[in-house]
Image 1 (cartoon, protein in one colour):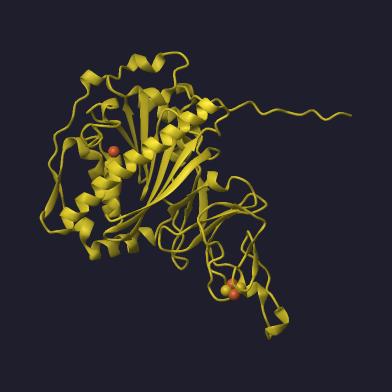
Image 2 (spheres, rainbow, N blue to C red):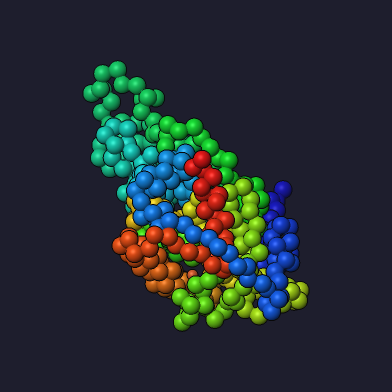
Length: 393
Ligand code: FES
Ligand SMILES: [Fe+2]
């Protein structure tokens, strides 16, 4: 008997409108023609202290970051069983693994002998076990202590009592969420099934990680996040880069649990653009998600950007940026497009959006403003703040 080799159909490199989730398709059909989009007028303020105050920072940590599950990594980084990656951005050393059964785990990256980190860099590794660099205690990817060197030198050594400390974790739509406080009750209520469907439609779970970069910024995490919730700055801050590609009009906004989806048309958008047969939907429409509380997902024609924006103090933030493509480039022209996109997006985010957050933080920290005022083109920021503030009451 001869075995039949089943070839998986190649993943299309271009996504058409029909490949989006049903809910995403409904949203793109709601985008107003460019010349009919109306910008609301609003009156809204927030005190500057929400960005600069230690009390506010502590409240966010207590009620959100240490009390609910937060995004810690991407499924795509540890796609195969037998892989692991560290995450240091929250100031809590984490290891995310996929064990040989394919199950995901999140552990504190701390050896149970003397606390040493098991993985010292944040690059993904393929391995069957985690070996401590200090005295070589060895753990399985499910956290079990497999072996300790010279076990006969310990009296009554209980191996089972020295497994890695595991944090409650869940994988949804290509994002790995975990509780950062191992003593807190697990709360995964912010994870929304529609968001998972959208992320799956975008190909997040099995995407190719083209590139990653960590940014350490001198700005409050919300200042880093705000530009991804408003279009007001796009034509101005990005005037020399991507600004001319976008219109100064509001997005279609949908809320799923505490998560926000923004759907917007490119410059001069007309609804008939959506019906051009075979058209790459990501050339016509941009999706920008805020996965509560701190992760931004933005689509571009040939790649997706994911940023986990991690607070490290009122004026300190670590951003874990990843550029995802639908697969590795299979020819030099494709590679050139990805390389150019990667360089461009790092420049736009790094030297434009993140710079804006840092220079705003300096001004706010000086005490020059009691309040920050928001325009109708920044309305979604206020929607996000209302959701966030809901966790404080
Ligand atoms: S600290 Fe890990 S084996 Fe000693
Ligand atoms: Fe921007």
